[in-house]
Amino acid sequence: MDWSELQNNPQFRMWLEHLIEDKVNEALEHDREQRFRDSFAVISVRKGDSLAEGIAGYLGKRLVDYDLIVFGDGEKKAVIKENLSGKHVYVIATVGENEDPDVSFANTCRIVSTLARTCKVARINVVAPCLWYQAQDKTHARREPISVRDVADDIIRRGMDHIMVMELHSEQIEIAFNSFDHLKITPIVGDYLNRRFERDHQPLVLISPDDGGVRTREDLYKNINPKYIAGQAAVHQLRVRGALDEKDLIDFVGEVGGRIGVIYDDLLRSGTTLFQAAAAAKNCGATKVIAAVAHFYGFDSKSMTFEEKLRRSGVDELIITNTRPDFVKKLTASSVYRSRITVLDIAPYLGRAIRNYQSGGTVKDMIYRVGDRREFYRVIHQAGNSL
Image (cartoon, rainbow, N blue to C red; front, top):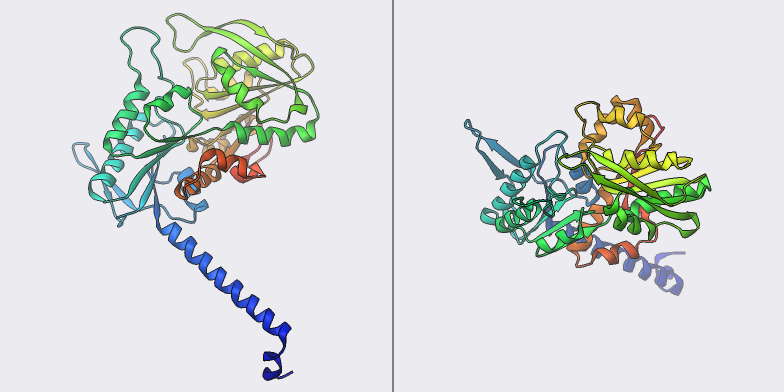
């Protein structure tokens, strides 16, 4: 069949029209995507931050190049080395391993101030996966600061327009910011546990590690398949008067005998609360204890390293996220960490949230619009596996 015959063939003409239409739509979509990506930029407060690099990679971006100049007297100055005029800028702010949070916060303020005063950007959005000073959200005695409010006031005054945070210690912190997105960790922890219990087929009991953990336990309950839940329990603990890191276990309420206990908490610093709750669950007959936390610190105490505390504890698996990303490097050096700790990477979650916000969506729409929540996270390491 020659070209003239093909031109007069209605089936060929229809195929050719569809082919041209598909190519035009593909080119238009590529152009829209390119213009969308060009509308914003991503910068990291810390050089070499694996979480920031993961977020930028998910968005198909590279991190903005800048220098943090340190003068001889210790003064610092942030210098942005790219033209960001008219763009929305997302500042990824994390705290490094053993880093003073004041350093991370001060450097974030420097970058925000530079963007606001000299870069002529359209909007400044701070992404703080683990918000500084969020545990200092109320006073426990007279003449104490509410430091998280100071954080909010300082960074807003520097020029921040919007903030994204993950799993706040207390939802009352939201009122300190003018514009915010609060991303919960429970949807991805719940999804991970749902997939685990598809295989294990053992009933589980959700345990609140202390009175303050009831809210987070309820959030997790909403994200786990009801057929896996055999009940709920709670541990009552009281902080020892005058001590920063000591608690007395008062009571355990609930039935965990012959079942798997699941303890969820927003913060794990020294582990005192979590480990006492796990021990209480095991003493009451729990066959296994799985703990999950949003923000993992893992502080050593004066008498014992966190690694040793975890080894001696009743926690069979500790699920953490990389809101404080540098800890992942420690997994290779510790057989205890490799055998007990599961790490979930939340870079896809934050990357999707940024894309969603940039295109005018809301976090709730984003979560419930996605059918498979594995799109929000990936398992960096699973307890018991080698790296």
